[in-house]
Image (cartoon, rainbow, N blue to C red; front, side):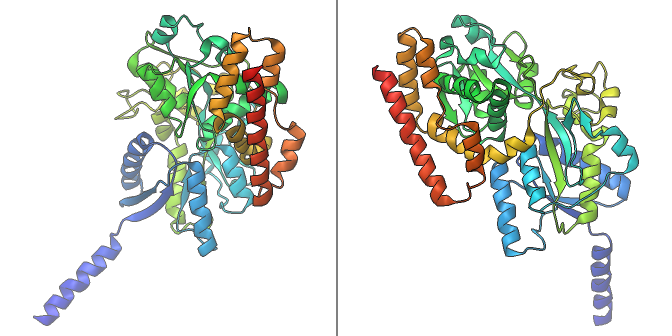
Length: 434
């Protein structure tokens, strides 16, 4: 009897080992709809292709910055591995930083897939030359607006970033705090680089003065526009486009500013010391495959499209566009687009932390003072000299870049931020009482 029980137990243990599911650990700032669409499909694909199940452990620490901090803390404890296989989502600058810090593993795509995902599109790089990261999707940035509120409040239909800085849009906007939102930071950089440092900062100041509040999430301004609490917001396409599709073009609109449209890669990477390296490679291959990429560009309900919610993103696999002509939610095809603005990603990555701290000090944390100053400037007729003074930056671009190289010095950082707050409050107080 004992021998029989032992044999049964041994068989169970052997069978459990032989047929145990493969596993992958993914860390991602992606919203839940991405997870809900991609992961079930990946599991189906994995079972059909590799004849075994796969367990997916999805980690979400909050936003991109929170995920990066989590990985750094893991590597500090165990330098060989973080225990995580794949980082998915977030801006290119984050991946450039992680690649520089040697936190990512190199991986080359199979030849067929590599042909479908070119090195560049519209002058935008889709993967790193060291093959440590690949774009898994692309985003564009524009203005999401409520047509009913725009009409009701007698506002012009916003078509350019400059429109959002007009006095008419005072108290009509909602923005996300760029210290908490990677997409908000990118949109600020688009304005800054397209207009130049001084003109760009002046416009950012007026746009900030027009906003009712700064939110902690990129999705909150979208909710404000949909509910009618705000007439317009700066928005990434994958938040805005599905809302326009579901609620109708009679109610909502999304405009890409002409000659200021940027294609921003949203990468995926295998992390150094990935404990499930083979599964990680298979996951990257799947995410970049035509079938998976169709989930990004097809509306809910279309064959091969998402099952629960339209994702409203741009694919990076050219074959996905060839196979979905006439069926996509947005006919825009980046592989046929020529006139796009190229963002200086290296400069963006270099100054991101210090620039966001400056925005925080001068535009967000002193927002009440800014709004009072802007109201006074508008009351006096928005004279060019007042507008220029309102938008005068505390440092030049050259000074900003020098600070970026020293920003790990906490004493310098805190002292500079305090100086910026004092600079902003003094300037706004003078304009408010002039």
